[in-house]
Image (cartoon, rainbow, N blue to C red; front, side, top):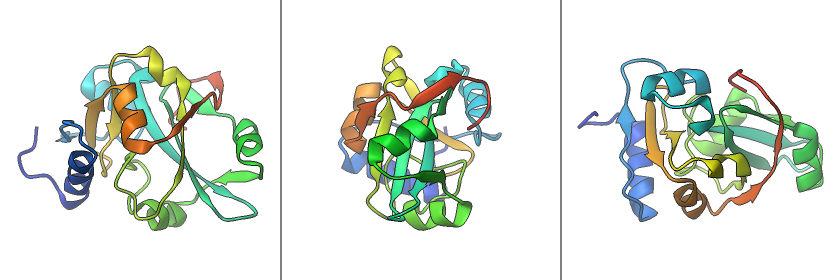
Length: 167
């Protein structure tokens, strides 16, 4: 565990404290950029990684954050129906503009802009999960209920088929 966190990880640590949860951001020596990397880094199941994916409404330009299990793939069709407009996965510039973080390190809290947030119901099968903490090398552990509390996200089924990829 790092005692002195880098700026982005510290921003997440501060946001977690402001949310009233006692989660501790840790910086890893290796990459946690993909769900697979993160699961290997903390020795947990792929499904316990809460990966943050940012989508963009094609009509409104609204950012939508989906926090899904690392074992799942988000159904863009299902998400588009949920928000009542076509969507696309956001590019790196849009992600950084909306969240303040780079792809591979987008946390569930501490964003630059207010985001519409959805949480994959599959995360609730685990007692503990791990989420990105602002960099492609930092994570923090929490419970699914803590995730719901800190994000105020809506828990829904947004997934398609199970897979082992990072998206």
